[in-house]
Length: 161
Image (cartoon, rainbow, N blue to C red; front, side, top):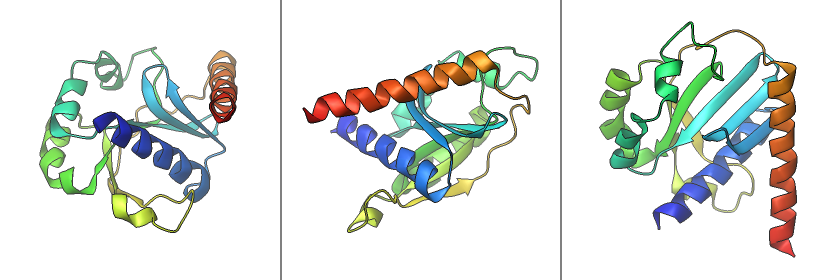
């Protein structure tokens, strides 16, 4: 059940970033990121999908949070980082996020909000993220994102066969 929920939230997050927020490029499952949204080479965000409080707490172990908290890190990092959680978890996760991930924003996902509407998820930003960096993507990073995007398209088409 949790895997299916995660997949549904990730798909709806991609739709939200592409169609509602008008990001030009949206990529899922790239460099240990659930979703990346890119408007241009200097405006991109990461969204990490969390389906439970335990799932969120396990994220603390990931090395990327050390990089995201370090202004001098040269590792790959987006301009802003968000957690996407089901709406009913917001009050439970907010204090934990504020204490352990002070740079992170929180988006909420409402499962019942998409009935009758395709490609428009009911997602809202409840806590804004802090700017992690202002540098543009390198050409290599941009090309890697495009490769992942094309791979996602091919995989989706193969699943339909």
